[in-house]
Length: 194
Image (cartoon, rainbow, N blue to C red):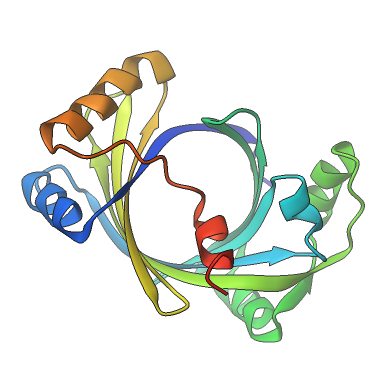
């Protein structure tokens, strides 16, 4: 298992037009263009109740995927525990719509006072993602996500420093006249349309 890391990011929902403008204007910045499937898991709403998320992410064309447990630390910071596994195993979990938690993720949950052995699939979402570095501090991500017959668009900015990243993030919103609409997590958006 990788060491847990704190993810610091700003998120904002976009209209299709705003998304298209950003894709066009930042096309020289993007160094990654991937399609990934996120499937979300829970057990009787226990993780959702604690504002946590458990997801399997499979990126098209890769031989390994990830199981990630996200534990929020604040509105902008999330502690992530990730286990990397072969895609065949993860595809089997998704086909079965359930799996037994790896020991590392089980231990991370136990530290939070949650004892779980296995989980069931609650949502499935496919995202086309463009990403690239704006600077050493800011990483720009544009997502087009498809779930339950819905499509939505989102800008994320992952940052090393929240203080340095916020003006850059807000500057992009201002430049494109984008209303500040902090995006709920993808899992919440997918679950709300089930």
